Image (cartoon, rainbow, N blue to C red; front, side):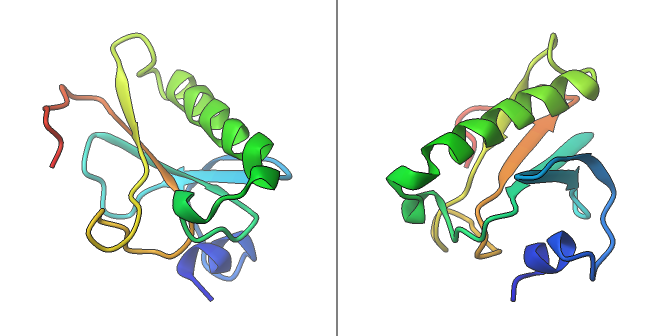
Length: 112
C-alpha cells in the first residue's frame, strides 16, 4: 500500500486543500516551490503509463482540480506548472499517479 493510499484511507494525515469523491489535493511535505500541491486520484493507478481508456474522464478531472487548486492558491494569474513523473527515470517516487502543482516563483526551463 502506498503512502498516498494511506492518505486516501485517512491513516496518514495530510494538509488537504481539496477533496471530492474522485480526488484529493494536499500540500507536499517536501515542497520544491513556495506552492507545491499534489493532486491524486482516489482510484489507485500507478502512473500515466498505466491509465486506460476507462480513466479518460478521471484524468481530465485531475487536470481541472489542478487548475482549481491554482486559482484557490492565487497562482493562476502569475502562472504555475503542472507535472507528473512517470517511472524511476522520470522521477516518480510513489507508485500512485499524482500531479504536482508548482507555483509562487519563476519556473526554469528545461525543468530537469
